[in-house]
Structure formats: structure tokens, C-alpha cells
Image (cartoon, rainbow over all chains, first blue to last red):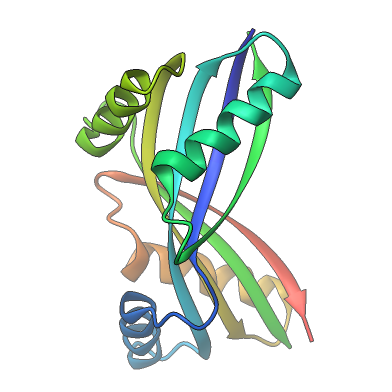
Length: 83
Length: 83
């Protein structure tokens, strides 16, 4: 079975996010009423697995082993089956 | 009214994505049955607007003016009202 996942990786609360802060300032400078911007990273991963449980477990492992830094990042994902 | 938006910025189809390709190779090297990885960028934006229509229009403008490069990027967003 083929699966498609969207993985979102963002900095944990408390970590400063200079890119987000600079983006917020730039948007405020353009006249928008922006309060805060947090920048993050996303991956779309297409992969194969036997069952949905196996797919979730594999994806979670991929996040912890390679896609994120568990010390400083939070992550979440949306998983869907494809043909 | 306060609004919170998640904005996803990804490369248009046809643009090569070396980061995604390298990530896919690395995951395959770790033994996962990965077919493809596309890397993208996400922003969480908190801002103020009078109405939902105004919020959507402002956010779309922010995306086109600052958050994305319309020549090479596709974008989408999810908008929600907050207190």
C-alpha cells in the first residue's frame, strides 16, 4: 500500500525564531496588523507500508531519526492512503 | 478579531528540490521504503482583521507580496479565528 504524509516540523515553544521575527517585522512594515509569525519546515513523504499501523510507526520513526531534532523541534503529521 | 493562519509554501511541480531528494536518499539508506520527499516551508501567522473576508484577502496579499515567490512557489493556507 502507498501512503502520503505531510510532516510539519516547528521549533519548540521557548526557542527563539529569528526568521519568524524578521518576517513579522517585514509584514508590519508593509502595513499588516501582524502579531506574531513562527516559521517552520514541512515535508511531503510518499512511502510504502503493509498496513496503516505500520505506516504510522515507520513515519514516526523517520521523524525521530532524521526529519526532526527531538531536542528542539516539535512535529506533527497527517497520513493518507494513496493508490 | 484575531486570526491564526498556517501557510504552506512549496516549490511548483517541475522545479527540482535537492533537499527533498537528499532526504529521500537518506531515508532509503536507513531502510525505509520511501518513494519521494518534497521539502517545503510553513509559517504560522497571527494577525488582526475586521472580518473573515478581510482576513483572507490580507493573508493572500501577504503571501503574494512577501511569504512566497509567485514565479516558483505554490502556496495554500488554513485560516482560523482565535480569541
